[in-house]
Length: 94
Image (cartoon, rainbow, N blue to C red):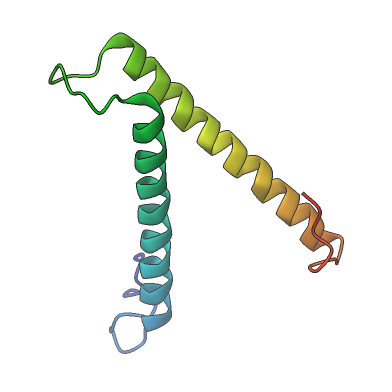
């Protein structure tokens, strides 16, 4: 079975529901990437470009920034899942 459901569709056409889900996932990943780039760029890279490549300090800062972004994203997701599992969609306390 293919990702877009070609193998499972009786008519051999593309499964529109799966295509929409894939499009939404791509949009979410693109949004996360763009937020990471803008946030970490503002924090780690000087507006005065002296070199064509990142220096050691900028590179380490970018690595840490991205790691922190994903760690916070993971913790927020866990909190939201716990709140949803508790049945309190309106009772979210972060």
